[in-house]
Every structure is written in structure tokens, then in C-alpha cells.
Image (cartoon, rainbow, N blue to C red):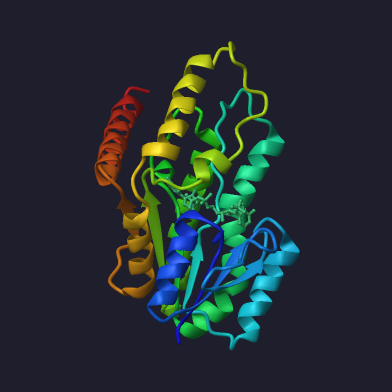
Length: 265
Ligand SMILES: NC(=O)c1ccc[n+]([C@@H]2O[C@H](COP(=O)([O-])OP(=O)(O)OC[C@H]3O[C@@H](n4cnc5c(N)ncnc54)[C@H](OP(=O)(O)O)[C@@H]3O)[C@@H](O)[C@H]2O)c1
């Protein structure tokens, strides 16, 4: 039976992917942050905070003890902190990067011997926010852009061992993340970023109530795990591939403008 480790399976995309993989015959271990969050789930859970070095080492040991072969690691655990550069504290930023970027890289590092042994796959849950920045999304953009760059490096490092790497880039899908994630504590209701905050607040309310059913994204995650022909980057969601195409076109225009400008020096 193939074996998968998925981080952040108490809710949302991680839980959906763990349930689907279990249903199609995978042995799945999912992580939760607190004992009891795994009660009633149809897959095995372990308590692990991906920002905790001891917990990460425990995940590596768990994989080792179960036969030292891991067919799939899904780095899904994440939070989405909003806040302008001017107001976000370094502590808040470290927390955001610690979960979404350092946590994913550390868990992957701990699992790589078993992933190499199984010629497995690492599926990193990035975001369309890993491709294009938005006002007040800087902390989240930083975490997901970081995950994208690190995944490009990882892909080349592990290709010789037959390990695949896939980036899932979801647009907005209705999960608890919009309500569960922290916002910059110093947010001002009438400060210089008040208009941006209004937009973010409206967007968060829309995300929680009216964004897309997560099933399409869960399908993409499961496909990335089970199908060897999955592309490296998978933008998923209504219009999301077009957001990526537009951003890629703007990068080319920026490079052209830079070339022209450099010739004037
Ligand atoms: N939903 C979207 O619109 C969307 C769009 C783009 C990307 N994504 C990405 O998709 C992934 C899953 O998010 P989701 O939307 O399914 O939200 P979610 O339901 O809130 O799931 C996030 C999961 O991560 C866990 N988690 C948070 N901090 C953790 C930590 N330090 N260590 C271990 N686990 C931790 C949460 O546990 P608790 O519930 O106990 O806090 C939860 O199980 C995230 O990486 C997110 O950035 C989501």
C-alpha cells in the first residue's frame, strides 16, 4: 500500500486530500496541531507543529519506522497573514514564513531519505499568491514565492533520484483559512492603509462564504500525488491560469524595459 504524509489535515484542502487518498487505497498519516483534532477521521493522525524542530524530527522518525519508504509528502500546512510592510512586526513575519516556508522545507528535509528510497513525490501547496503579489498580502506572498523558488531548486536536486516535485497554485477555495489566519495585530482602522484593509476584509468575508468549492483543488492535489504525468506547476481555480499568464507576460515586459533602460546608462 503506498504511503503518504500530509501536513495540516484538521480541515480544508489537507483533510480533503487525506480522505480522498485513503479512499483510493493509500496509507495516509496526517498531521494535526492538537490531540483530539484527529478524532473521527478515517486516516491516522499525529500531532505535529511544522515550526517545531522536535516535531519535525519526530515526523522523520515516524517515516523511518514505517519502513523508510515514503511515496508522497504533501506540504499543505499553512496560514495566510495579511498586513502592510509598515505595520507587520518581525515576529508576525517569522511566524508566517515559519509555517509556510521553513516548515515545509524542514519537513521535506526530514523525509527525503524515505522519499528517495521510494522514488516518491513532494507536493507543495503554494498559491496563486506565489506567482503575483497583492497589497497587504506581502507576508503571505513572501512565504509562497519562497516556496516556489525553493521548489524549483528541490526539483533539480532530487530529479536524479527519481523524486518528483509538484507545486499546486490554488486560487481562492472555501476553507477555514480566511477565518483561522492571523492579521497584523497593529492594524489601524483609520491609518494610511485603511482603504487596503477594507478591501482585504471584504475579500476575507467573500472567501469564507462564497469562494469556490475546494473539491477541484483536492482533485488536483490527489492527481499530483497519484499521476506521474502531473506538470511541475498546477495553477488551479477559476481564471487562475490566466492570472499566471498575465503575470508572466508582465515579467517579460519588465525584462524588456530593463534591457532598454540599461542601454541608456
Ligand atoms: N483555501 C484557499 O483559498 C487557498 C488558496 C491558496 C493556497 N492555499 C494553501 O492551501 C493550504 C491549506 O490551506 P486551507 O485553505 O486548506 O486552510 P485550512 O483549512 O486552514 O488548513 C490549514 C491547515 O494547516 C494547519 N496548520 C496551521 N499552522 C500549522 C503549523 N504550524 N503546523 C502544522 N499545521 C499547521 C491548520 O491546523 P489548525 O486548523 O489546527 O490551525 C490546518 O490543518 C495552505 O498552505 C494554504 O496557504 C489555500
